[in-house]
Amino acid sequence: MLSLRPEGLYCERGDFYIDPWRPVARAVITHAHADHARRGMGSYLAPFFSKNVLKLRLGKNIHLDTLAFNQKHYIRGMALSFHPAGHIPGSAQVRLEFQGEVWVVSGDYKVRPDGLSHAFEPLACHTFITESTFGLPLFQFPEQNTVFDQMEAWYQRCTLAGDLPVVLAYSLGKAQRVFLGLHKKGIPVVLHSSVWETHEALRKNGFGLPEAKRWYARTHSNELPVLIAPPGAARGGAFLPKRPHQLAAASGWMHLRGMRRRAGYEMGFVLSDHADWNGLLYAIHESKAEQVWITHGYSDALSRHLRENGLKAQTLETHFGQLDDENE
Ligand SMILES: [Zn+2]
Ligand SMILES: [Zn+2]
Image (cartoon, rainbow, N blue to C red; front, side, top):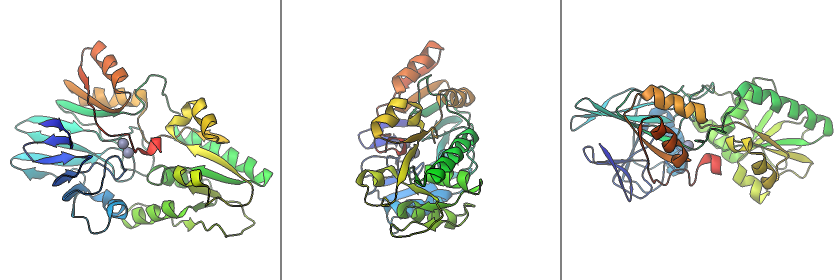
């Protein structure tokens, strides 16, 4: 039902590509991260809950149609539908069914609910195309509540020291999770402009996010909030306040201590929008698929593991992960 072409993952029956990396006439989009939703497509079909962020990132004049989750769209007898992937707000898996045969493209996903994104829905299929960003057994992520407790303790240490706490989190997905986690603890939060714009786009798209304050470098207040900014902004450093501050990163990669040290962050919080090793195995098991194609990460390790356990598994060379949130 799907094959790999130079432009991306192609469906011949429907004549469209899923998350293509080169310009094509018809693109079906799982979510708005830069490695999945690119500019220059003739038309886009995406989940309704990703509408505003797609327009924010790709331009408001793109030709975009949306579908509700679970809504079936028929193309030459084939049913296409989007189902929650639990990765970030509005992210979906794509399910294709033709004459009883079912394929599912996971996009990026995580199986544990984050309290904001629609929760991952396990889908039974014959062929499952899964990501594998953290597809090594060493990746076992903590519960997010544990991480928010650590963040709260760090915030209190920063406050005592008079340092402004800055959390670096990708502007779509991670930043809203950090915002909500801190907000629920009553900790004041301000958002870097690109994070604030994404926050507003999601609010207007129906996500129940509280109103947020935008950060201005010249803003002066005695109260110390947590500032959430994208990692890219920190590299230039221009937005950073003149006052003393501490930098922390929130990412699945913070599981690797060396990664935090090399980046020069004072703190690392293990908070991922991707499934860990057990999460990947859970989704693959629940799919009951006979055939698994693996993209986006440690695909060789995961496909070897699956083959050793009697599954038909193979690595698929895609361009996903190259501009990914977690690799930002
Ligand atoms: Zn993603
Ligand atoms: Zn990705």
